[in-house]
Each structure stands twice: as C-alpha cells, then as structure tokens.
Image (cartoon, rainbow, N blue to C red; front, side, top):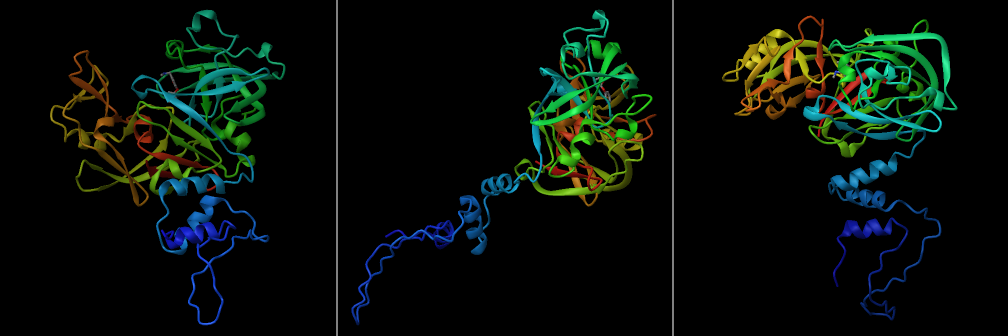
Length: 410
Ligand SMILES: CNCc1ccc(Oc2cccnc2)o1
C-alpha cells in the first residue's frame, strides 16, 4: 500500500476529508488487526482552499512551499478588500517607449498611451488638433462621448525632457485602465503637439503617474488617474514590470509575488519635485567593487535611457574597449560586440543589475558595428533619470502609501 507522504495526507485531512487508510479493524481481544477508517465529512469544517491547505501542510512539516503554490495562494489571498487591476504594456522598437491601452468616454474610445511616472498629465491626441499634426494616431473625440464635459476655462501645456511638447484644453470624462474606472478623470485634449509626437504613430498620448503637484492644468491642477483611484485600491501603490522586447504589465493596488524573485529592496521617495525621487548609494561596473557614490534621481518610465552623473558614466565606459563620447551621435557609442560589462546600482542595501546586453541600446549604423549606449550623462537635468533601461531589469513598486520605491529582480 503506497502511503501518502505524511504531510500530503495531513493536507487532505485539512480539506475536511479524513484520509482513509484501507484495512479493517477487528476489535476482538488479542487481535492486532489492520485498521479501516470510514470516511466521514467533517460537518464543522469550513472548506479551505486546497492550495492553502497544502501549503499549511508543507509548513507544518517544514517542507518549502513551491513557487507555483506560493503564487496561487498569493492570488487567492488577495481577496480584494477593495479594487486592484492589471494592464499589459508593450515596448516599441528598441524599447524606446512602452505603450498601454486605456479607454475614454461613453461608448469607450480605445487609445494606446505612454504611462509616464515622470509626469502627471493625462493628455491624448484629439479631434481638436490640426489634421496635419496627426499621422496614424487614434484621437479622442469628446463630442462622441455622452459622458464628456468640458472643464470650462482650463488649459494645459507641457514640455518633456527630450524637448517634445503638447498643449490643449480639458474635459472631464470616464477613463478605464484594465478593470479600474475613474468616472470623473481630467482628460487633457491636445490642440497642438510637437513633431516628436506627430512622428510617433503608435503613441496616442501620455498618462502621467507622477505626483499631482506637477500637473500642468491651469487655473486648477487636476488629479492623475492614480491619485483619483488610489483610495479605492487594496493598497495605494502600482507596480511597473517593463520587459526588454516583450510585453510587460502595470498593476494597480497589489504586489504580485509571482512577478519577482528574491526580496524587494525599499528606498524612501522624495516627491517634493512631483517625481518618484530617490538616492542610490553607488554603483559597480561588471564584477568590480561597489563604489560609494550618491546618485539622486527619479524613476521615470517615460524616459528611455538611464541618465547618470558624468563621472559615473565615464567610469563605466572606461571599461569598454573602443567606447567614446561621440558628439555627432550625442552620447557614448561603443562596438556592439563583445557584450559590455553589466552596470550595477545600489537601492538602499540592495542592488539592481543592468545586464551588459541591455546597455547596448541600439546600433548607430546599418552594419551594426557600433551601438549607442543605454547609459548616458544626466548633464543639465539637475538629477539622474532611472529610465526604461534601468526599470526593465526589475519589478518596481511605486508605493504612494508608504512613499517608497521597491526594486526587485525578476
Ligand atoms: C519619443 N518622443 C516623443 C515622446 C514620447 C514620450 C514622450 O514624453 C517623454 C519624453 C521624455 C521624458 N518623459 C516623457 O515624448
């Protein structure tokens, strides 16, 4: 008779079904008989989620809980006291930006926008723009939404780190991301956009996930989508799981334990400038020693590259044969092969590793001989920018409740 491993037996026992050990009890005196247990349902036992019971059994006998079982429990345990949601985000070529679907208005108008933790305006291409400024983008048409209301007298105007800009007026309308809806979200309709946006055909606008303090609507700044929804979420946080050349996700209101490995390194956020600001304690190049070197910057999903202090950037490229600052290209360029060394930066007492093959951002020539670096100088900005090159290596928690950033490997 194949006995269940003891803890599995206990597991089934804890599911309210007594484990049956076949045999027959002969109670006559002196008999050392076999035993038989008639299965009876335990009337007082509330049915427990099977995996939970199994995990309980593993724990009871000191067996490690397998990763897949842990993930199932996490999903089960997240009994939504309140809301939570998830949406997929896809990289454009060379991971230059990540585009995410949203719906605006009634009936819903589906647009694809750039979620940007480095700004705080939700603005979209609209029917109020000149046709010549629209090249392939999907536009929001407030007149086609029964729930849109103009925010009388309000305007907005924004310029981004790469020099791109846009401006327009403001509507209040319903906005849905995944299964989360804000019925009265400020939707900034573009009347003008700069050429960088016109020439970016798949990007219908930006959804700011920075702090509302830097929303540009005048005379009254408007809340971001996250600020409008966060009090109804299970937890006042969202996570960014951007990937290199593959779909990733933004989750709202929960941390998915199946999305990362190891521990999350937490670091306090300085939101005084409206950004997800933090200070990294230092860096290492490849397998070299860690160098203490404070780098104060922001976690910015809307910036493509990792922009760091000039001294750190030159220390990194010094380790790459043939790397040079090419003013024609506007940054460091180096031979695409061999793969450059990893770049490691500190987050509190943890580290984040940017693999060498992610430092090679994109070839600068058709022969793919030389590559433009994913790590470049932050000169003139006033702080570093931990953009997509840094973020896509990690699972990142933007925790407004705890005012902290969490970085984990994946
Ligand atoms: C690619 N240029 C147009 C464009 C797409 C997204 C943005 O916006 C940015 C640019 C830089 C930093 N943060 C947001 O500009």
